[in-house]
Length: 291
Image 1 (spheres, rainbow, N blue to C red):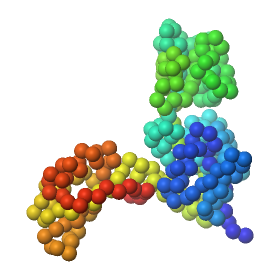
Image 2 (image 1 turned 180 degrees about the vertical axis):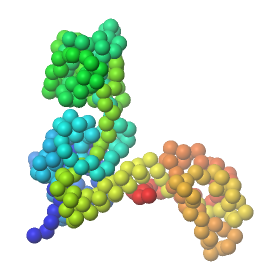
Image 3 (image 1 turned 120 degrees about the vertical axis):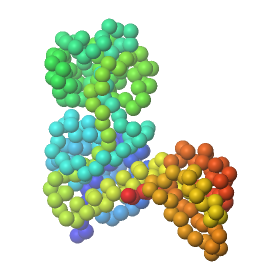
Image 4 (image 1 turned 45 degrees about the horizontal axis):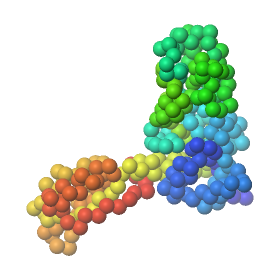
């Protein structure tokens, strides 16, 4: 029987971003609305859709060999899992998410100290209790099943809620008082599974290529030709990861240059490269950068 890796794919807000990331890394995942077991074009991997909130628990027990979730949920559940790598992506961006303490924007609360004896609604009860303990504040923490932003001030005095941009909080006329936890997406593994040589290598290769795909998200490649006597000027325009690749063409008076740059600066450097003497400038997308 073929050995397989049981991999948890986060269902919910991270699902689409995760499927896109795997595609960039070289794996095609197909999800059906009627199944919790997505297809993947790798016979060595079995995927299962699991809510990020539950992922660490199932990985800890060995129901899954590995999975992708937020570090916040590993901390919230207290699961004993191996964190293999940090994957710098989230639902909307490459930035981390924040669990924040928020109150009505026109209310008097300016710090967590003012919430002593009050009610705080949140999905992360344990994280919130630990946060309050660090600040020596005693308050009642109630679990929220969702729509947490609408619970203040009628049902709670404050909330602890996750945000990337703060737009949902502002739309509900809430004001951030403090950051409880900053969290990134992590690739976790069952400790027993990671001790298995085959599974450890499979997991390590997955994390390597996923990280390479993330590194390439904001980068593009640039190829160009330039006369040898203009090379120094062109190289002065180009930033690079380390140094551009420079090679001689069949005409010894011409040089080919290949490099990687941030996508958001391409529109400004291509005209400068042209002015510096570059010709045949080609911009191309990147799937992975493995350093």
